[in-house]
Image 1: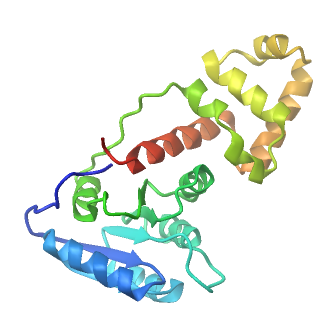
Image 2 (image 1 turned 90 degrees about the vertical axis):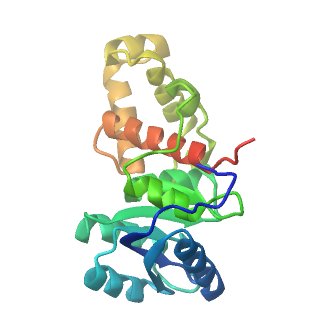
Length: 227
């Protein structure tokens, strides 16, 4: 979600944790958040510092960069840590890497939103929106359009046959027998195709896969600057 003016909302007491490997960026985000009314802003420049602050301060929101410099662990691993150990904290990715693959990986890790670094993003407004339980995305594409754009899934080892099966399924969610007829495959072979898809994308069933893809699309909508 984007905004046209800096957010100047009411003063808020919720704690916001920001994890990024660049100190200058951390200071910039802290300044913006405080100007936007957030009085409790904690900064972490590495995974371990962020982990300690998560345990001691129990922040309401964590803004997490994906790439943490030379650290072995990525920001997405910290997102997973939040999901497992601090379910009351809202995990949000804040990154300059806006590739579709990263949107998907962020959704898979458990992030509830993806903000792309840039002047068009009003961070205090976005954090306030999330704390108020609101989303800024407007889903204006059908699931078939989302699923058909599968180039970014090649890094997960997806084959053309697998992406075609998902794309066809997303049109109207037919039964396996009907989908097999359309694709001119035996149902038993098609079930094996979906089993490989689940394994490669680390999901347990098709419903979870569709949810991930839909969240990924919402991330993409949130990240686009307004006209």
